[in-house]
Image 1 (tube, rainbow, N blue to C red):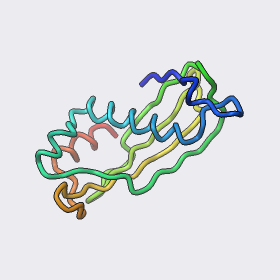
Image 2 (spheres, rainbow, N blue to C red; image 1 turned 120 degrees about the vertical axis):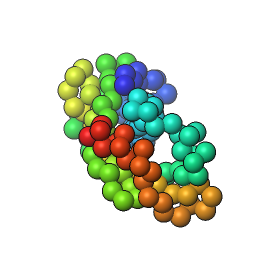
Image 3 (cartoon, rainbow, N blue to C red; image 1 turned 60 degrees about the vertical axis):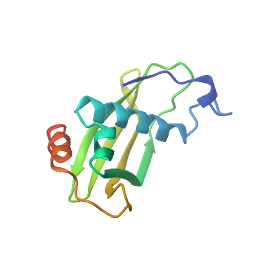
Image 4 (cartoon, rainbow, N blue to C red; image 1 turned 135 degrees about the vertical axis):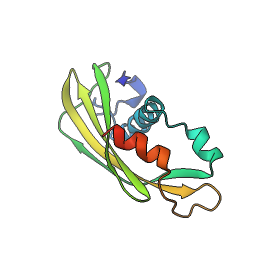
Length: 128
């Protein structure tokens, strides 16, 4: 997924402020799920949702305003009630930032843990 670092995302040090990478990861995850056929509105209609329970980011190189940036996404793991999505931010084709987010699937009614739905499991597993 291509990203154009916006001026508003740049901190006083002239690089993308660290918190913005989580926004980029969220946008990339949404696009990834759309691409593999997982519809968020359909999940909600089925009575399930998912929430972030862990995220981590490692910085290897700075990303600056107007750099040529893209975010690669892949499913790293599918568990019983959770899944892990890995992200690589590429600057001019070279890894600059990596991260991963663990999501837990929950009931949309009361947010208790819920098994990853079979259709979601199949789509995520195929994207590994």
